[in-house]
Length: 206
Image (cartoon, rainbow, N blue to C red; front, side, top):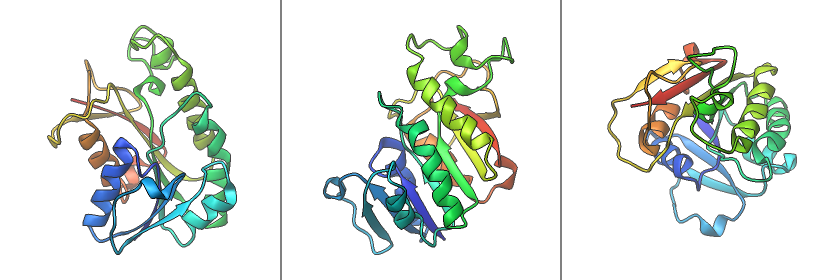
């Protein structure tokens, strides 16, 4: 399988990349600066570019079977600004599957299911700007025709790979406090072929 990977140099994206290469997949990664990437592998190639540039996305997505995005948000709303181009490039390259890393803030609140967690006191973060960027990206995916899954971790320390965690569709597991980058990445990667995860947000925590 050929995987187009965004955010390959990030904490979660780099682990997804390692998993894919270990399993013999071909990984084509889009990076702003390829010189910062130390990993080398015969099945790994890079496109130097920006997720806001659709032509550079096309170069990364060409002949790929699935897109995985470990992109994080920033103060420039990069997630929601890049999503239209990502979706267009997926259409151009006839890719129907995308898995992204989101945030537990955009899951439905258990106490008030009509609201997102970041809109309630279930979320402890004072600033909502990152969650709002994630939310805009989610709503674009939701209104698209692609088979998307958003993996939504709560507090995300480096931690360790335990292989033991809880997941719940559309909500965070009860009293979920944290989840390591390793378990988050492993779970997201495992969803490549799982059709029961299509078009859903999945909360993940210990």
